[in-house]
Length: 237
Ligand code: 6PG
Image (cartoon, rainbow, N blue to C red):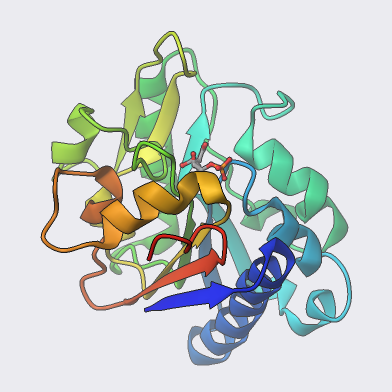
């Protein structure tokens, strides 16, 4: 389902409201809310709106468990850190128990970081399916999502749930959840803003596909797939 909002602020409010709504539903249904946060710039405003009333007071923070769909291979205090951004705009301002915030570790290699995060997820979910209640995702202009980039071997990964992604001249090494894991989520919500994303958004959504794009791998098995976009990003739809 595609929902178009008049501007970035309205889009951010909708994404924040979705977080609050899903958190309440999951907390009352299962006693906890496991959420995958997206990185990049787009979701920051939505996260900031969760840190202030009314939404701050609408979320059962004691039952929230925070994970990331991907992370740059940098220390958490690095400006490029997705976890660092979320802490700055949201997590340092709401009462999520510290032990319920699960950043991707930055070990000497991305493979070590990925293996450790995979173990973190296994420990959290135990024998149950690794089913996030909500997964936020962004969309890159090249059709990537999380750190699943065009041409990456991570796109074919069907066994590993978390993999390392080597850096290039343009981008940092990263750790990413793989599509099969993201697709187990009960609800996946892309948050896409800006005229610069209009062409790729149309291409990702159009059928039949012109070419394989990482974002097209995101097809929740049983969950909902939402595209929360602003009018600029939807300009070519
Ligand atoms: C990251 C993100 C990445 C992001 C897209 C969109 O770590 O960079 O996970 O997938 O969501 O690149 O980024 P913007 O929101 O900054 O456009």
